[in-house]
Amino acid sequence: MRIILLGPPGAGKGTQAVRLVERLGIPQLSTGDMLRAAVAAGTPVGVKAKAVMDRGELVSDDIVVGIIADRIEEADARKGFILDGFPRTVAQAEAFDAMLAEKGLKLDAVIEFKVNEHELVGRIVKRAEEAKARGEQVRKDDNPEVFKTRLDAYHSQTAPLSAYYEAKGMLKTVDGMRPIDEVTRAVREILER
Ligand code: AMP
Image (cartoon, rainbow, N blue to C red; front, top):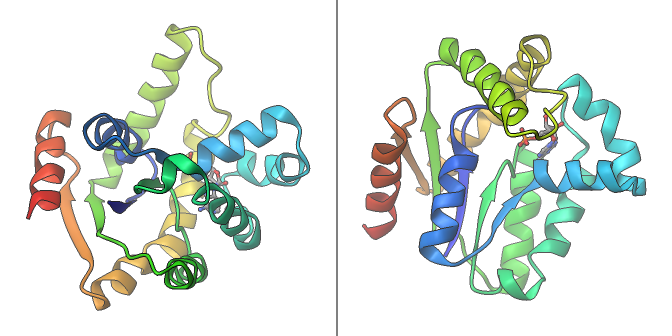
């Protein structure tokens, strides 16, 4: 299966992606994780992306489209994948469609997590505190100031993807404010339909 998870930062895409990985046995492709790994490794992509990510803005379409094009070629992604955080602009969605068409592959579902945005900052702060408690490095962009920029980027650049996939008859929505297990169940029901 090839699945896209859509929704603002803190909506629960990553949490649900991990559960889908366990159930479906296909990898989670998180461009955010891949970019953070590139930053940590100091690769040319990481060097370019770091300041943009720290500000909460979007990395260029060329960079992320290139990362995904390479990643879906890897053996573990042949059976399918769960995209978490990609595409984030209409240009990325179009490039991704072209990529799939060229390979003769198709998308199975686009699932959007609907959330109450006033509660998202609280989730982000909690995520940062939990990471710290586990002794992990806290994401530089998981703080209320940068979060506002990330949410703005979501509204102006990513939210139009809902209409993009709706027009293709691909869009399904779930209530992302429900308890985690209920969201998991709702996602499963969509995929089993
Ligand atoms: P995330 O972990 O998905 O919240 O992503 C963290 C940051 O990585 C974002 O705020 C962007 O700076 C960058 N990023 C991740 N995915 C994308 C993407 N598809 N397009 C552009 N920038 C991205």
